[in-house]
Length: 124
Image 1 (cartoon, rainbow, N blue to C red):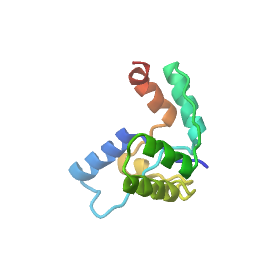
Image 2: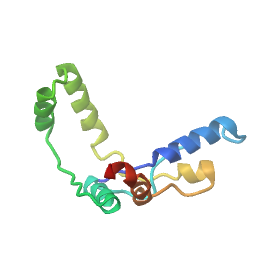
Image 3: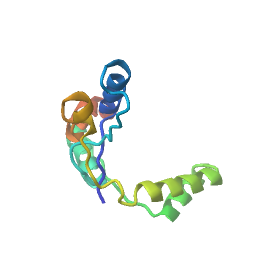
Image 4: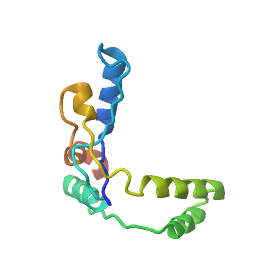
């Protein structure tokens, strides 16, 4: 499964433009990054940028719940998060959109660039 990771700065830039510039009234922009990535690929980008080993380790809903309980998370939050993960990570997001370009006239930032820009925070 892959996800269209979107840079939060792109989200902020589109929101700023929509709220402060002419021509956005009544428009809906679907925002995604420029390519689909697996979580393992995103972890590899973070590793490369930060110089630290980062790995994606998939867990089952039961494993997540067990770990969350051990960390003291309330049961209703565990149930809610597992439901959210099941819906969000069901493959429905495996598509790309051009909303950043439509709103800003430039392409969306790639996750690799995001990882490079954020690498200093991960090195600390």
